[in-house]
Length: 124
Length: 112
Image 1 (cartoon, each protein chain N blue to C red):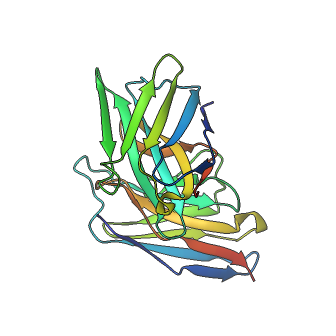
Image 2 (cartoon, rainbow over the protein chains, first blue to last red):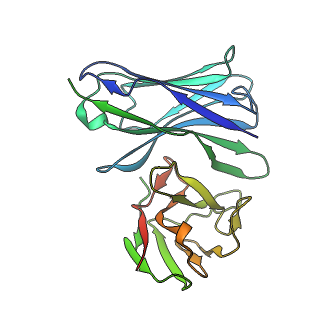
């Protein structure tokens, strides 16, 4: 059974970096049949996909245009996890952040498993 | 970005009665592989979203058969045949055909 466990601080100061981690059990971050996503949810923006990382003989990352200049997603194969870094945060980045999995086979199996969510508040 | 529009945004229902949520896409969701990547998620209060339906009409494991999905092209529907108390929450459609993936605004289901 696949489980995603999120960790990271719930309070970040404006202009600083938001950092979250999603630890994977029951699957592998470097699986050729999976991809790993970050999504956030806020009252103003709803559910918003942010980033994806996946391994297909090499690593690939995709980012939402709205945050592309400030965001990095990184896999960590030694710990079987992946992380999110969002730089230069403002109060508009206040949201619940989720990690989620895709699986790929005969069809794209999108967001089938989600982490528990992390409430992140950007405030001084 | 592809826009997903749900209606209604609020849906008061009587226990045991049916409920229906509509989702409309600004573009056809038929992908070049022939699949239509339209999923439905349920978010109960204080919980993460949970996928109910994938690729228009396929129920996820453990999802009660009172939930069903239908539609094609740009118009889709989630039906609950007989609403139960545990169905209270917000329901989202999501498209995975066009990048970036986008969600509807959500429909809040509550008991009358």
